[in-house]
Length: 353
Image (cartoon, rainbow, N blue to C red; front, side, top):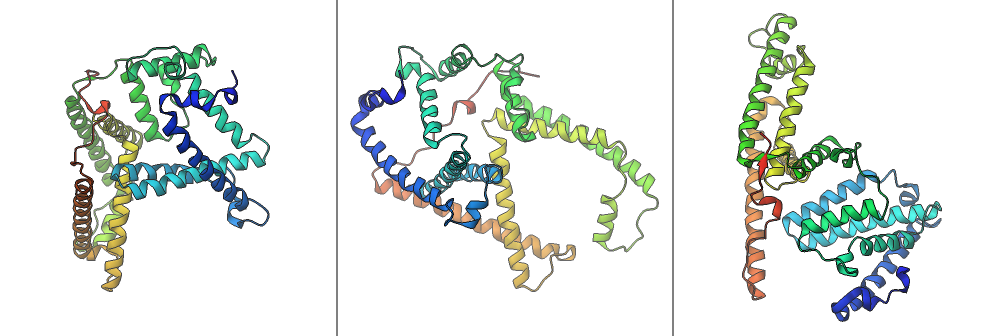
């Protein structure tokens, strides 16, 4: 049956009286949104928007996805709404650009996505029965292979896209291996592995530094300016750089594994740390400029003080936000509760030593 012939009341199910008015409201908003996007790409539109292609905004899509993830982590409704809109904008732009190029119509993309959702949820729109999220995933993969004709992979790892950035690829590789039972018996054991990898890296780095110092010649003269000395150390030749690179890779891979075992997406975690460092460093820059001090190693004590100042301000703001959120919930007659943890954060059998 063609999707357009299915009554919306049937698709909405027992909550149709609530869902359909919400759908009408969303459809009107998307009509407005689509009109604006199309106008920006029209001859009398915006020069920047006209210059864009799906390729040129790939980085923006990734960045906005992380921004939305960060807003969700902060549980900031206003921020979530804003970032969600930004992501809709980029998705709509890609769709409209493709429509202009004659590849497909935005409406076709939305209908195909709707068909896929119906096809892969026979327990909602058909007669299938499932009892758990895990069974839903198994059914989903079975439909992809049996009905949609997707080729069954030779290896579980073939399902991981080979062009993913290394951090995301490591995370997905580990998740696929864990799905097959190739995992740790106890997640706490990852700390022993981390300590082992750290020691191996320290040994490799020590060997590289010793050989580098031997080949670099004499030690810097006593009294040499500290920044210059540090620079000379950094530029010293590294013995067996491949071995050092391999040990760094092993440590990073293990850190990503540790994050996975504790239910943390390492990409999002690193994105948060990048943003946090950037905020604090900009604060240091601004305070140093206001103090008429140069950003140089001899002023490290003052830079450290400004860094701590930024950290205290962030900690205070975070506490204030938490108090305001609790006060808002109490005003609505709801008691603040801890967010439910996803299943991945619960104890999971581990078998990988």
